[in-house]
Image (cartoon, rainbow, N blue to C red):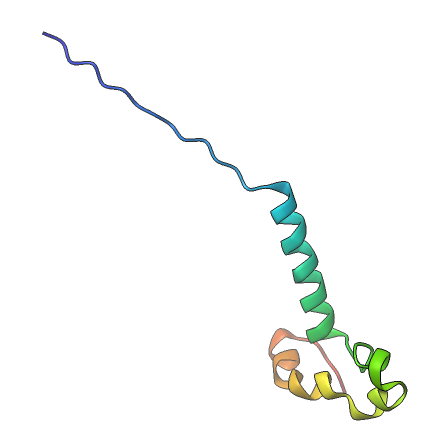
Length: 71
């Protein structure tokens, strides 16, 4: 007697919407860590946000670890 074996292959793919959302989150994170100099909080605090540099100070060490010069 011969044995019959079935092989089922599941083909799943990542949604294009999920890839787009992750790309947007990555780009926003890159901006915040690497380039923000008060721009994000300037919507709420105005010109004072460029003086305080809150996000810059919070991500300062991470900027240098990632290779972004900031001063």
